[in-house]
Every structure is written in C-alpha cells, then in structure tokens.
Length: 538
Image (cartoon, rainbow, N blue to C red; front, side, top):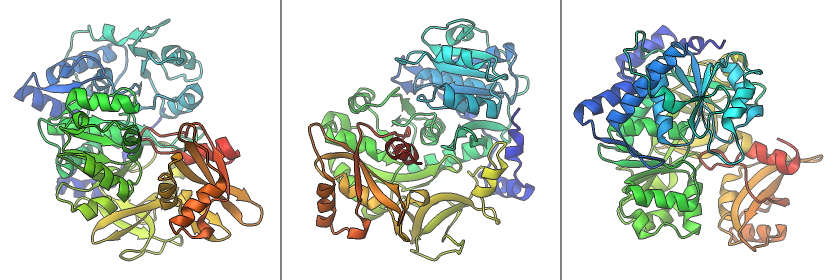
C-alpha cells in the first residue's frame, strides 16, 4: 500500500514557516462549501453538464456519499480513483471522498486499462468512480476486469450509465442517510493525488495535503480577481491540475462553475453562451481553434470580463487578436504544474505589454530562480531552467525516491523543466528543456518556430520534434495538422520561415503530416507520444 503520509513529511521548519506566514491554514474545501451554504443555500454551485446544482445540493450529496463510502468499508486515507468528465457528479464524488477522509486520485478520461493498472497499483486504489457514457469505452467493465490485476481495488462505482456485474450506481449510494463523520481529515492530511506524464512502468504520483491545495486555490482566487457571483468556465478537465485548481478557486470565491463535459469548438461556444460565463479558463489551443472556426461571436463574448490561459505559452499575437474580440474583457496568462499547482499569473492590473509577453508574477512567499545546465544560478533576463520553492509545492513523489531525487536540487528547489527568464519580477517562459533539439551542438528552441508556422494558412497545428541523425545527433522534424483540402511541402514551410527571418540553422529538415496530435487535457501537444507515433522514438 502506498505511503501517502511519507510523501507529505515536510521538515518541521517548513511547516512552521508556512503556517506562520498564513499560507497553510486549517481550512478544507468542505469548509468553504459550508460557509456558502450558511450564507445562501440556493447559491448555484454549477451550471451545465447536467442539472444545475446549488451549494446546499452539493453539500447534501457529498455528505451522503461520504457516509455510504464508510459503510462500504472504506476509511480515512483510502484512495478513490475519479475518472469522470466535468459533470456535477465529479464535484459530488470529489467532495464526498474528501469529507470521509479519503483521497481522490484524478485520472484522465482517455486512459485505458494499460495505463490505469500501474497507476492504481502504485497508489493502492480501493475504489473508483467512473463514467459509463463514453462511446466505445465501457469504463465499469474495464475497472471490474482490473480487479484481478489490482488486488487493492474493492468497489467500482458508476456515476452515469449502466452498472454491470457488481458495480454500484452512484445514485444508489446517494440514497444513504448522511451521518456525522467520526474521523474527518485535518489540513495536514492527504487531500488529492494527481499523476504527471511519467512512464506507466514508474508512475509519478503527486500527493497534495489540504495545506498546499487550499493555499494555491486561496491565493490564486485573490490574484486572479475571481469574485462572488462570477460564472467560471474551465475548458480543461478537472482531472488535470489546471482544471482541478480552477474548480476550487470558484468554490473558495463563491463563484459558479460552468461545466463542459467534453471540448469541441462549438460546445465551448455554446457553453459560454448558455451559462453566461464571466470568466473562462482555457488553453491557447482552445482560443485559436474557436477563432479559426469563427465562433467568438458577440453573443458568446458579451459577458466575459477575464480569460485566463495556461498549459502552454500564448503567443503575443493571439493575445492581441483575442483582446480585440472581447468587448468587455482581457486575456491573462497563468502558469503552473502538477507539482506546484498554480502560482504564477498576470493580475488584473497588469499592463497590456505584461499580459502579452509574460506569465505574470510569483505570489509573495515564493522563491524562484534560473539555472544553466551546470547548475549555475543566472541573473536577471538570462534564460535557464526555472526552479521553484514555495508553499504550494509537493514534498516528494509517492513511493518514487528516484523521481524525487531527480526533481529537487540539493538546497530544496524544484526543477520545473521549463526554460524561462525573469525581468522586473515577471516570469517569461521560453520553452521546455526536454523539447530542445540539439543539432550538432546547436540548441533549437521550437516554441517561436511553431508559432510562426501555425500562422501559415495551410497549418492548423505545428510541432517541432527531434529526429535522430547519425552525424548531427538530432535534426528538426516538423509535424503538422493541415486545414481541410490544404497541402504543404517541406520547402513551403522553409520558405515561410525565411519570410519571417528565422535562421536557416533552425529550419525543420523533415516534414510529417498527421490527422491529429496527441493532446493533454489543456490542449498541449504531447511531444514524446508524437515522436513515438511518427518517428518510432520518444
């Protein structure tokens, strides 16, 4: 069984400092929910994705589920997998598991048995809540079959759709009469598990205590200016760190979640329009795709006052183009990752130039620095790996000491793997260290090249990945998704880059066309999987 508490064994001095500084408090999401129920039982907590739900509805259902899970034999500290889209049942399951002292572990909807089995075994999952309404995927049957491969797995709960075999319908559990929880979680207890994109043979599971989870949501809500009465639509899945933190930000602030179970450009536009969303959280790819489809119409954008984009750097031209579309709003960039949650953002008073080019500022109490490949600490405006230390940060990966050792410096800074620089206190992400292409000792950063190529009228998406080369080590391979009926030759792409004054040494030397890119829930291209698909590497 995974030792979650060992992954939360922060040094005493660290605990004392973050508590004294007010970052680590004794609150939990259920306390925020109780506060809003006391103020207004009928306050809407979610719209869309199913029937609207008030905060009193959510509290009642979560309490019933917490009691039912205890009656099923689960206990404090037990891990419950949630594989659900952004629907009301996900909110019920998340808060119900937390209320009984369990630990929700979020897994993405595209994962299937081959990815799930190692994850479930790694964290000793006791139960799963799944969605049985996705075409071509019988989730309940999959998890029932996984019981043989995952000895710890006892209960399969179905939130929507049919419940085959000895699977249990969530609705039946919600008929349970709620009872007081004898041993509720404390703020120091494990509150959440998220998985990074590590290999399936050695999963990298990140456990956050209520201390770090709630600190990130609390500070982010304030820095982003989310307020009581906002309707917040988050396009990324709540099983992703970006989406999960957004779901807690709205709860802390008293806002309403506009739920979108699955993304397509028309569905995003319809959800914003139908719910009257005032704040949206999206990836740059969501913005660009809906822009190309002509879906940012006035009836969609009229209520939007703020757009927060993360998961990938948003090109300045896209910031300008989207600002011009929004009659009453602005776009702000944010940055975060599973291990440190969501600490960096552009705040409402950021200048237009700051919003266009930077990801914002780190909150007070956080320390960031930049280091070169040799570990030397760099100065102002010098590009290096962003390293991080602060009160939202994990202490260690679950039962993976090698990954933990690789992730931290000797003096306790987390190595983010992002290439960045800082100027006047603002963070500028310039790429991912692992995405650099080493062409005979010349390091090619693909970020700006990809942005230029995506402006080509024939290109919908572009990615630059390393292709092995016996002489140079690596060459740049361009992978594209083309617009309908469009064609593109390698020479066309090279000519386009020449027009935009990109040095020839940085041009791609191979072109591959694909129908679709493998994407994360924030619509970021998974380059390792892409390289494996088109080149057999990665």
